[in-house]
Image 1: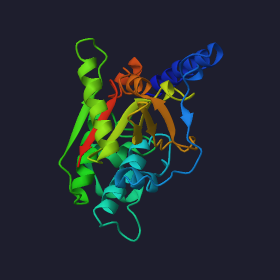
Image 2 (image 1 turned 30 degrees about the vertical axis):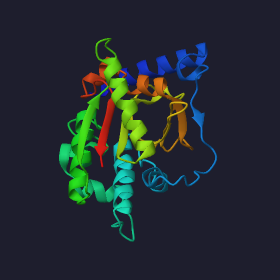
Image 3 (image 1 turned 90 degrees about the vertical axis):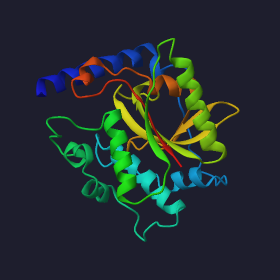
Image 4 (image 1 turned 180 degrees about the vertical axis):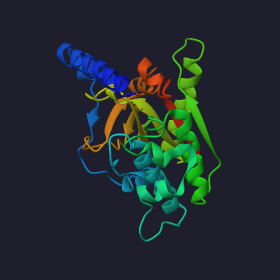
Length: 251
């Protein structure tokens, strides 16, 4: 397992340095725009509260924990049940046992596997909402495709949900994406909530939970879709990671 880990890291760094030297990928012209100004209250309860409860992950593989903490506290706040001390990431790991979540966050992982693939993320989100008795209409796991016969419908459905999120706050989108396709980082699977969407420009703002990313950032809809529809490096498949996508919480 260690040999596979070092092999994978070597391939990832080779790809990273190639993009850096050639000014391609996230090092190219279409870079994410960092939102350095403080978030201004916009009147959308869901968006405003997501920004309020945005937290950073506590180690390199715990992006799912920070993301779910943000979402759980957001929904508890909106539903008027946020405790005096918001739900912590440790609270979540102690409460939600689905998919061996806590074990996956440990230094050795669960059977050598760390982090959460897309399908496991969906199970964990549903379990967390149930554990904290959060009212919602449903949780859907959506794998994003690039095949010609599937991409258009998938894009239209996603855009419709982003517009609903922006205008009426009727859902929350958690992205499972290739971080290195949006930022000058390694091309690894990553998880973070969507914080905003601009229907006019089609831009998507990511509330990235990575502690090394100092601000939320905005990308075009097409960049966002490319990131969530990435078929991760084949070596990741051995650890349960296939293609990216998103988890949609219907409110």
